[in-house]
Amino acid sequence: MRLLHTMLRVGNLQTSIKFYTEVLDMKLLRQKDYPDGRFTLAFLGYGDESENTVIELTHNWDTEHYDIGNGYGHIAIEVDDVYLAVDKIKQLNGKVIREAGPMNAGTTIIAFVEDPDTYPIELIGKK
Image (cartoon, rainbow, N blue to C red; front, top):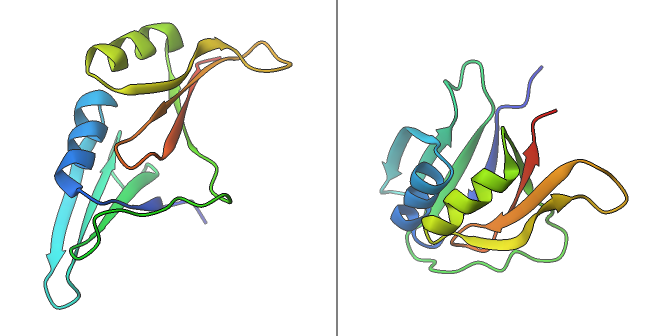
């Protein structure tokens, strides 16, 4: 068994694809419209789905906004240098919600950013 993907519902698919590809450097792996169901699926990640876990963005054509709720946590992405990643994200007008620095009660360097639909994404320094 292996983890295939995490699905996020998004209000504006093109804005979300732009964030994940331009700000977080993911690749758009595939995208398909389902006219009968009035939705589009887009799969993004850092490598081929056959060997990597990816993110599935689901855009329901008739929904512009979702409430995340209080049970959802975050997506975590490993980066070589959290400080440099945060600087790059800021330059690309990404929203940083927790600056780079040591985690609470630990030494691992982390930061948090937010995607266009307000999903939190943790950046964790490579060990």
